[in-house]
Image 1 (tube, rainbow, N blue to C red):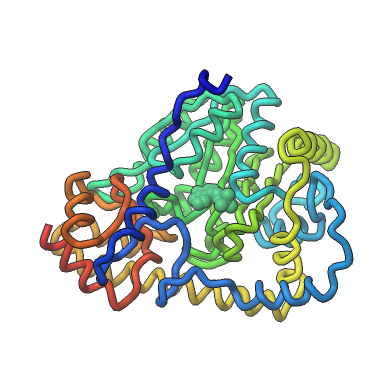
Image 2 (cartoon, rainbow, N blue to C red):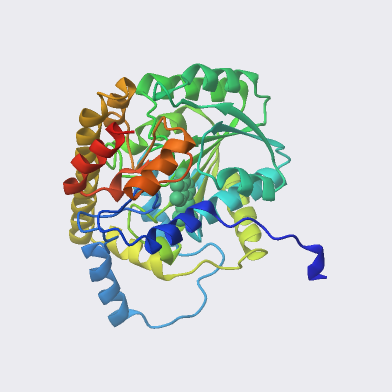
Length: 389
Ligand SMILES: Cc1ncc(COP(=O)(O)O)c(C=O)c1O
């Protein structure tokens, strides 16, 4: 039976990690990684996470199942962080998921179960979005979200896509820190999107994977919160991988924002049922850590402070890069105003390869760079290599 299968291509980003580790040149730089790195090149464990883990080790009394919905206290705290007071809590259905990916998959399965057929996706996007939606049986309609040469969000294309969508279609929106472009939607643009989504009867699926990495914990969800005050229904997929540094603990949640507590209960039961037929129950540890942090004002303050330090490191690197690169590409001044870990540089694939082979600077062929992959001391050297292209 296995002969009926064909070999699937390896993930190009994983292949890049292999190439980078084999490179023995001392000054090599990895701009391809998908995780936060600090000035020493490590992906740190937050101080508050370590403290919470110590506490859990001492106090946890059982490893019995948590149930398909996961940890309800975790869900309450996480929703407070994401949604604040914007929506009546009893109208919000929450289910804990294995990471943001699990949340997106449950959302896609739910849309499919509701009879939704199509989801609108702005390109470029996180490479796993389209495969997840396809695997759930959704049809994908795409539009160009970002213009790489000018480094600007193609807002007109987004508006045209929403205007062309049919009632009942879903639309994927990045809450902030767009992956892979770093492109920012302004407050008036969020207001326009919210009005259009409501007017056309579309279902927004908002992907929130980098809260705190862009403009700050509150600002990174301001557009989303505005949307939630305007549209009757929405899905919000949350990842704790970056914001809490819990990547491998697979921590996240899917929230369904509805118009009544009975509708929320129906959505919750469907999400839980979909989880049950997939992985049954989510892993506990990461959510227990997040719950412990958010339930303790001292730990929560320390976590937010460390997160803010990471954010400032990234905005500092962005500024240095933008100033240094402006000479070669005028448009790259824009990367200082972008947010989150990623930007997409206007590089031809041959230039990406030249940077790799001649200078040991690694990034995927698309030209996506992870700002956090750069240490301050490396910025001047990298700018010089870019300028010599
Ligand atoms: C935009 C976006 N959404 C969702 C995810 C999924 O995150 P997780 O690792 O929590 O599954 C990622 C991860 O990189 C992402 O960049």
